[in-house]
Image (tube, rainbow, N blue to C red; front, side, top):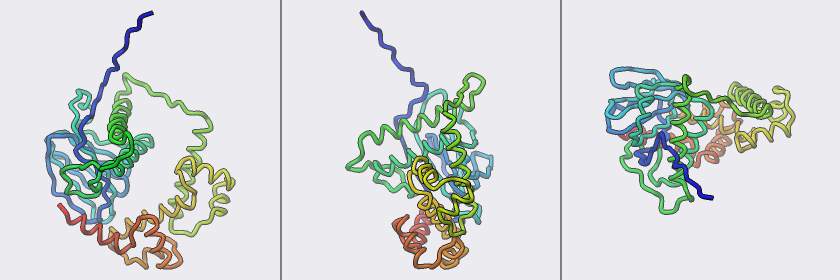
Length: 297
C-alpha cells in the first residue's frame, strides 16, 4: 500500500521576534512615540493607558489589546493616576491574513491571556535581555535555555493570532466550546472566588473565612486553586496584595507604611518580608528600579 503525504498549510507564520516586553510603569510614564517596519501589539494587563495610533487616540483598560501595523506611528502614556502593567510584543509577519489586525483594538479572553502568559514565561527562560527594559533594540539568547523555548514562543504567538482571527471571522468559522460540565463549573467557581478575593484585598482573610463566604469546602477550595492557579488560595491572595502594593508604589501617592496598612498587613516589617519573598526585592529596591526604568527612553 502506498501513501501520499498531506503537506500542512500554514495560514500564518512568524519566524522573527523583534521584542518581547512586560512593563510595570509608573503612573506618570510617557513614551513620546515611534514607528517601525514590523508589527507590534500592546495589551494592558493591569491599569489603563492612553494610546495614539496614527491620528487616532484611545484609552485602553485591563484586558484590551491594540495592534500597530508596520510604519504606523504610535505613542503610549499612563493617565497620571493608575500605574499600568503592559505586555508589548513586536514581530515580523508577512502573511496576508495580517490584514485582520490593521487598526484593531479589542478585548481578549482567558484563553488569549494564558497564551500571552506562556510567551512571557518562555521568554524569561530563553532571552537574556531584560523584558522590562524599554530601550531594548536587540533580544539576546541565553547561553542555556530549556528545550524548545524559542519554538514555543513562535507557536504560542501564532496560536494567539489564529484564535483572534477565528473570533473576528464569525461569518465563516464557528468555534463551539468543547468543555465538560465539571470544567465549566470549576471555572465559574474559581472566577467567583478570585473576584471575591479582589473585592476583599485590603482585608486579612483566612481559608475558613473564604470557605464560609463562598460556600465551598476547604479541600475543594485548595484543589481548585492548585489546578487553576498552581498555588494555594492564600498564596494567590498574597500575590494579589503584593501586585496591588507594586501598583501603589508606582503611583507614588503613599509611603510604604500607608500601603502596608491599606492592603491589610499587620506591620511594615511583615509587609517588607512578603514583598521581597514574592518579588525578590524590598519595596525600596522595587521603587528605585521602576524609577530608573521609567526614566529610560
